[in-house]
Image (tube, rainbow, N blue to C red; front, side, top):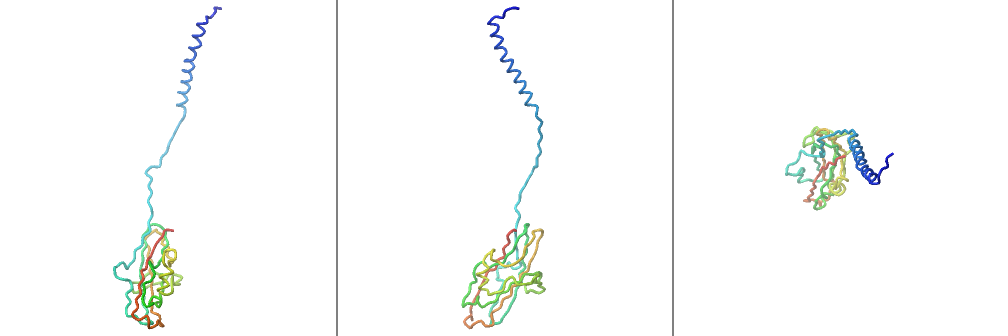
Length: 200
């Protein structure tokens, strides 16, 4: 057997290195193409907020109530129809935007009753109370202005579904107490009524 020189052995040793790298590169190259992949998409996604919206039949600049020259025992009523056109289920409450403005304690001597129902014109003709027909509020004008002062303390049980436009009629009855003192003569009282809907 021929004897291999030291120089030839060294050459063979270094020549083996690139050959090993070449084999390794081929293995990596082959591995990088060995996996399958697949994707799926759900495109054109959109989001839109729902709405709560209210409207009423008495939007004119004039006051809903303009009772004048009242005397003890006088009673009157007015019906206001409120429409919900929002797209979300909600709860509607009625409250006073601020305490009743009053002189000569007239607000303390005016009784107020609020009943929810359906139908009825401004004079409450053909008004039908909802069942049960228990009034949403009974008390004085002054008390309503302080106890029902925001949504949380407001009155009413109406809960529109948001599926379509819905209406609710509010019959508001007022009267000057039969025992109102003479000191209330010439007195005045005013109150702003607010309906608010919040989604449920």
